[in-house]
Image (cartoon, rainbow, N blue to C red; front, side, top):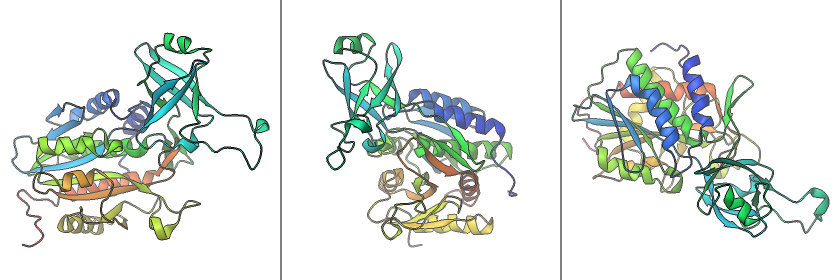
Length: 362
């Protein structure tokens, strides 16, 4: 495929709506419906599992099965305790960062509709240098403008209501997509774009392709663990985000050297099947797609681990997207990297043959 612009105005409009739509872990259904509507013209059929993972299928009749996968859920909070004065304390739903919370605006999801609230914090004038407290899980709180617990409950808020930040999508300096939950709905966008390109370019794959948008990754890869048993694939190419370590205050000796704008990041590690990784590297080199390398220790920390070690072993690989400011409301990725991850998955799929044997020794 020639190196022309992949992302269209229509697909970018979808990306904006998709990112702005809340999709907290365990409550992904709204975003999943939106994603399915987008990919429906490019697939032959789809199915949804018990917990909400959505799978679009191309060539469902084929025996040999290849998965391309991302996760759909975003970090969030749960209402945990409401004081008699009407202040709300929270528990994490996934890896929410307590240090960024003060002064953030949020949406509390209730059966009566969305309720606005803010993370309050004492004014600087009231704090004493040297003894002032840092934001922690036990001292950050929400204020929804109520004077009592009863008033809060009248709004439909109760223990267990999920809370998401209201920050929305923007494009920074024409080069960066910015917003909350790029981890990893940008992955869902990229695999959807692969499906679109396959359809528009009339590519005939010799295997069944399962475009999989999994739930509950942020709480332990749970959606992937469930769906791999349903699909029982032969191959899985997973996409997720990794850190741009070129920004301030990050130790490259500990975190590695990967950065936005330098291409997809290919991971080496026990869960990554070496022959599949070499196939992807060959696809990158042949098509002049820039890429970076990273090394994982025991685990990648992504859905790759769930696929690799299931159903007797699935040949799995991880194509990551470098991202700045992970688990904040201003997660940022370079547009060129997004296009190159899409291109790399697209080209790699065309190198996989029906009944391809990825066993380590052949």
